[in-house]
Length: 540
Image (cartoon, rainbow, N blue to C red; front, side):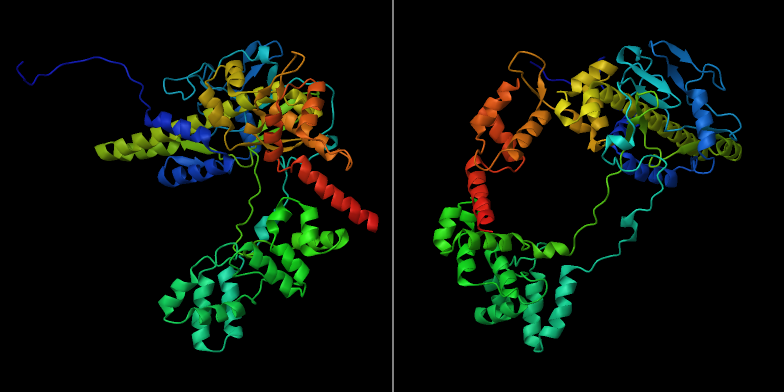
């Protein structure tokens, strides 16, 4: 067979992600805070993008009212008249100086395009889902009316709250290394000891433990290990107590010594921390040679210690969770779902500026191409932001509709739910629903929850009825254990019997898995602990 070169033409089909589609998918995954950072970067690069912070909410709501696509209670759609007639929701607003205005707080819909990341028709009829849109807010039919304040649980700041955050006043804290070096300068007089102590401090990890090898340090400094340990003992006396310990036992011993409580009995307790972890109180009494009251007192002292003394320093500032979606009661007993407009960026495409600059750059081909690219990028960003807002509202509204019992009665009424249930109901792909619910939070009357929280696996019903949510079953298990008396500790088998009596078909290993995930000890460990507590209470 002869080998030769040849040219062939072949026709085929392939799925290609355009840069615009990649951008839309990326924006869909970001939460509001990450989205604001991304938009800031785009504003600094694109001269045709403007930040919309000067028109005020009244103008934005007026523009939203022109572009809003309303649905009545029966699902019939009625297009509100727009400034452009049959517009696509992205046209210029009247009297805006030739700029495109997009309000991210509304539920206006955008027609699907060839590069739509969801590839769905957004003219779907929502009437069958019981969802209504009124004044830019998605409303879901519900039952009895209850006030926001009586629902309990601070959802944490809805749109319009102007409370000053305490985290804004927190100053920079001193690091653990700086804190120890300041004390070292006072504690040690000899330059040689200061050098060794400085090296030991550099070996301290974030929890306050000594993480290096002392033999290697002695070799590097050209000294004996005994001298290193002598300086280490003095360095371990620095504040906070327990710092520069080599293990947990030494860390606790240093803190007890600092309180003048390191006696032989409690030292024996530290030598048998494994028994304490298993809550084997009879064995601990025998090892320590004390009675029940003294043992419980020593255990209380151990629990009052800090196993990671270095974490008081270098601790990152806890950032409060900022909800992306607000869910609250309306005056007509319906659940209202709206985006958190306080954290959503608003951008404008300055068409007037583009028209003005285009006249100057008409003869420069490169400048004209650059302006065209900027305009296309700006338009795609506004469309993607609008598409993101619409998609999040659709998914959140359907979650609220399907988990209505949770918002009404609590976690015990949480229904089993998977991504496909939401995707089928609103006509989107599961991957789109997954991106929308990842790393996004909803403020509800019962607190702030991640949208992923409402998706739980199903546990079959013992009577063949409706399945139970795994999260609701975990809540039941915790409630049963919390209510158990000290003289009747519930075993995993007994919990299985009680749950099956309530109609939950669950295996013993599943109960054990849920219990361990909630960090609840076994029945043997709980019996020992409660027996010790009861004995101590009886002596008092």
